[in-house]
Image (cartoon, rainbow, N blue to C red; front, side, top):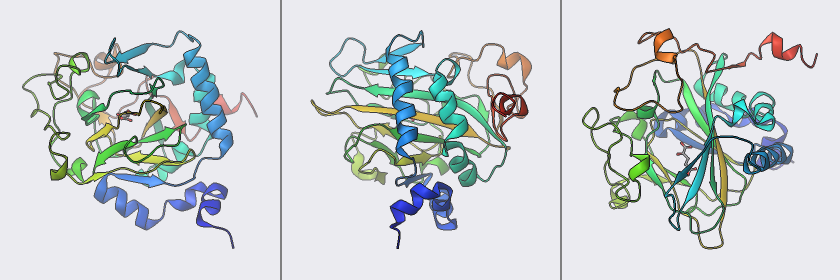
Length: 293
Ligand SMILES: O=C(O)CCC(=O)C(=O)O
């Protein structure tokens, strides 16, 4: 008889059972074991190499100049062919589609979080939703690590917090000063200091083996564990949405993430989020299929 892990690899979508869907609805996060064939990890590794070889991809530094510095690159999809392939060809989009129950899927964005040097700082606790110009529920992020991780180094989540308040984001340029300082000021309640009061929260994280994926709702409070002096954590998040996601404005004091110039001129509050900024992923558009059929 095949082990459950072997079955996951043969038919990754079979792991999205009704029970898993119910956990995702309740906790806003699920860990799917061994759903990515090593070939997809190789593709991801090649994509990361291209990013690191000065691909011209835009890089942001968190904790710039400090020991804990780490790198984020965003919308790799647009310039890194391996990430395009991963988004279209791997089971990632279909896993999210099955979980959020949408046959139509669009890419919101993708981000690498690259903690390579050891002793990288925590990614501060936050929700993604305040940074994004969206409303609706059919959206999720798949977080994939190229490195084996302990629970302490993994991305951590406050189970069920997607059903609670939407807090202000943290201010990326002030993370070293205080990772709860607000991004917008006054429009949303300030982030609670989860790290200081960890016992008050139902925090979930997992030991990760490459091939595992964590899928989370972007309104779940989450933060990334630091790495040890010899540890490294190279992860990508692929964010995909379905039918019910619509455009929503955010306070004008800060641009939304990632930058999408012109979006607010072409869409009104509440209109479906359809724009060249967000390519359709499923069904795969015919013009893309014609490239290989
Ligand atoms: O990997 C990390 O450290 C942060 C990831 C994250 O915040 C996200 O995927 O939304």
